[in-house]
Length: 351
Image (cartoon, rainbow, N blue to C red; front, side, top):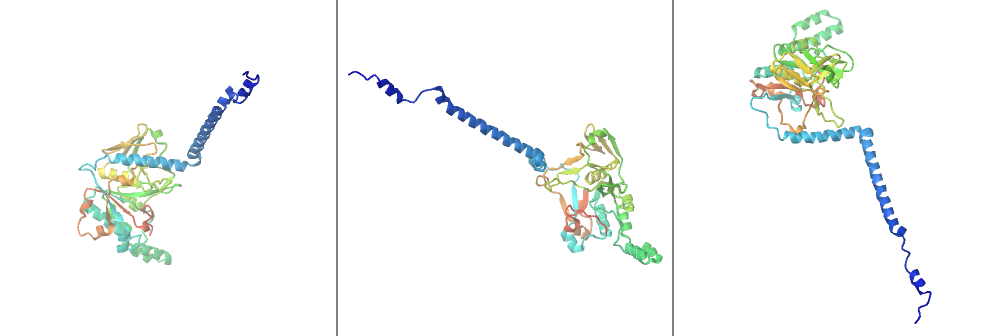
């Protein structure tokens, strides 16, 4: 039977046209989608980068510091306990129990003199007091007599002060002739001269990042003259409230002065001066040497990773009938954790 002449045309019309465009168009759409997704991802990464580097520097810094904390914590697990014969560190803690038993803060300076006497009698190699004594005593009988004499303009009362108990005189006697260290606070304006051991500096340009202030609030002259050394009390905190750095040295005007902890070490080893090499990034005092960063800070490991430091309540030290054995041969810090002494365990001892 003959095939109609229009049959092939009908058959072909039932088949979709086969052209290159019909195969490549879906692939192009897929590639375009992937390119758009990649572009959006890159844009998101860029925005996050800008946020961390420009808009949220504190967040970025906190993340970096926490990563460093983790690294140092892991490293501390590999460090053995202090070697036999190393100098221990002991804290005499003016804690809440001590203020509850002895009396509210601030204490009379005669009590602090008693703590110094106890530490010295036990054989402490250095005694550092983490409290600022920027003003003369105002609580002892002698101080009260002087103030009353000034108020009523009676010279006889002022003369009476010389025969009464004077806590500054008592405190200075306890400090004198012993390896003692007092603290000073940094201030934005020039205030008092800070006494201290000589600091010999080479390559000062290498210390451009040092924590520097115009002046300092130092102990009273009578107390500063009695103490062996003087160190900076301040500790810089990060934006998350954690103290991760300890100042080895600070700038006070044009002078360089040590932090309280390092000054206690110097006094403990009996060294007479410091040597700083900014170019080499090193410092030395006596037989103690160490690395010195451009900011002259010591990076501390996380507290949980450090060996615990022995702390003895101040009331127990004052109540002891004889020498406190734990203080023998130790670097002793007298400070406080009681709320009255402030969040950082220190407060101006004004009254």
